[in-house]
Length: 155
Image (tube, rainbow, N blue to C red; front, side, top):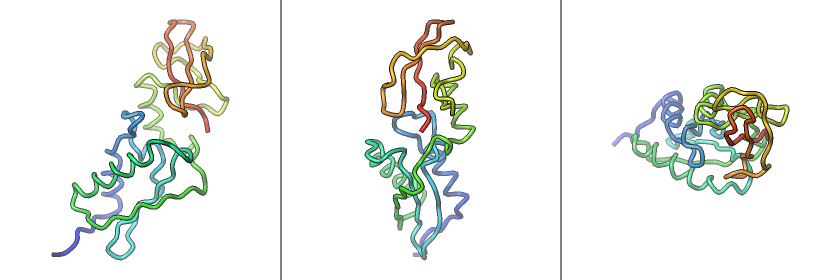
């Protein structure tokens, strides 16, 4: 039996369907944690950079990636963790940033806070708490619509 050896572009497409477990509207590819995909002989190697060391979702993400690849016939898989360079929010794709905002999470901004409310678009904002539902988010409120929302912290 000959092992399935899909093109790296196909693998990237499959991984783009694997959702982040903490924010399922964004894929692990759009999150920017999939750093590289390639073949080492008959082994598919996928390099991952966690958003931060100790991220509780890292193990789940690895399991979901393996399951997605095995479901498409890839048997010999090696996941490598790359911690250098460290992940930053700059690695989020434009598609991922748009999906965050559509979902009601303000995407990260280099100025340290959201530009606008992801619900109404208002710009009169206040930070409620630096700590949100996950370590990568903070709680903000729009003074225009009075709705609270998550802000994906700039790292």
